[in-house]
Image (tube, rainbow, N blue to C red; front, side, top):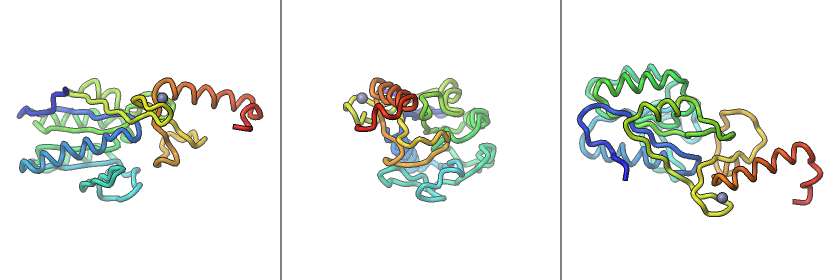
Length: 202
Ligand SMILES: [Zn+2]
């Protein structure tokens, strides 16, 4: 299906999708395989994401792997020269400079695997993800299952009313929805804003 990297030269791989799509699990799978093959790996995540732990990339089903929380993507450039694979989780929370940093690492011969949300809760491309997807050698979109109809989901629908772009959370804050169910939910929310009484009994 997708061409997981077997090259000796550097490259960028992107694994992206909605909340609950298994993108962190896929990142961890690729990193653990590289580790098993004796390759030196380094893993980073934005310092903003401290849902479970400050030093580990932790996925929702608690597979985990040690990582370094950083604020500035440029810190990744300091990896030691023996590192062959660099993993980045929750990449959407980094600024645009992540793209140049990943390019620089790949140009050094490093395999860079980046996982992140492709779109935010409003359905817009999230942070540096669209540019990363454009320059990557390989992009894999992973999907959650729509909690309303069982189709493949590619939207992270926010259940809370917060407008804050960075709102971390789990099942109480987001639900994965397919395009149709997401559009229906958003339309309904817009209507509720205009006429709150209409939906009081739901
Ligand atoms: Zn659906």
